[in-house]
Structures are given as structure tokens and as C-alpha cells.
Amino acid sequence: MPPGQESPEEHERRREQMRRFQVPTNEVGAQVPFDPVVMSSPDAAVLLEGITVFSTGVVLRLRRVLRVIPPGADPRGRPGHPGEQLMVGVTVADGRTASSLGGRPHGGLPGPDEMVLQPQQGGGGGRIWSQQLLLTPVPPDGPVTLVVADPSAGIPETTVQLDGATLQDAIGRIQVLWPREPDDDHPPVPPRRPDLPPGGWFERNAGPPG
Image (cartoon, rainbow, N blue to C red; front, side):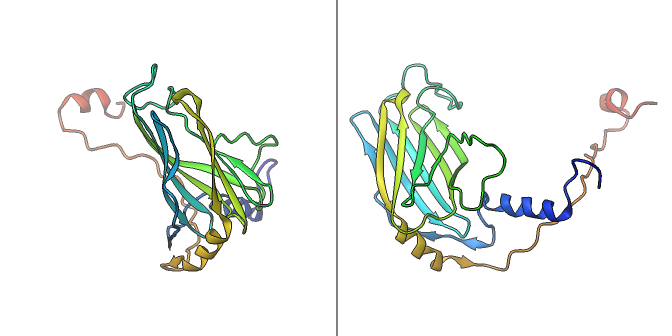
């Protein structure tokens, strides 16, 4: 085997590790009841809009709402501007922590028992910003502390408690649509050029050489 090339066993092990960061497409997740208001002030609020448990972890859907657009924020919602960096963290009952900011000191893929909070989707801008994260694996029984903060938008560090036992119980309510099929290794397909209008500009200027 050439140096630096992983064996088939290593390749499959790495793919199995990566699957934990994906919501299974063959599952209908179990919804968990929750208090929607994480924090609220006269000028800002953070809302928990959904908790869904899958076999690989827990999907958290959060929304940050502001009374007015903060100075310096981009009303078109481009990430990285003030008021659009909602920080999210979690501490589970056994002391493990995870953050949406990442920052793993030793790099590489996390171990199977390491808590990870993986941002999946986000969008909005100005007064509203929504974010979806996957917390993996499903936390154990006991208190789960959810932490949010966005100082640039006037949202101080705020914590709420979730119940790990409720999350664990929800695993039994996951609906499996069909057995998970193995991933296929498809060879890369070169992009296909569109059919060029005959005799036109594209055929003269963007056609194959010669």
C-alpha cells in the first residue's frame, strides 16, 4: 500500500466515525417537549424551537430575535457581523462539554464518547437568526445544561436545564423507515459540458479547441 494511503479497514472506520455527524436519512426523529424561551430581555430573546432525538444525537433548533438591528449588523444576514454569532454550549451530567465554536485542542476526529456540538444549518439576518445544531452522542441521564451567549447583540451568557433522561427515553420512539444501506463509493464523474448552440458565440468562443 502506498505511504499515506489508508487501508480499506481504516477507510470504513473513518466513514463510520463521520456518520455520527449526520442526521440519519432512514429515521424519523422523536420530538421532545421543552420550554421555548431560553432567555428574554426588553431588547433580545433566544428561543428553543425544537428538540429532536435521532440515534446519532440530538438536533437543537434555536432562534435569536432582536428588538432592533444592532449597530454594525448587516441586515442581509451575512455571517460574522454583530448579532449574528450566537454561541451555544452544552455540559452533560458526567462533565463532558461541547461548543458550537469547536476548538478541539488535539485535532483529528473525536472519539466515540466525546461530546460534539456540530452546527448544521443557519440563516437569517438583522433581527432574526436561526441555527440548527447536532449534539452527538445523545447525552446520558441527568441534567443537561444548555448555554447561549451573543454579547455583540446584548445577550449575556444564559443557561437552561434540559433532562438527559427524557432525551434517552426518546430513543425508543425513533421510527426507522428502512435499514440503513451502506454508503457507495462512486468514482468521480467529470462535469459534462452543455450542448452549445450550433454556429453561435459559445461554439466559436467556448467550444473545444481546434
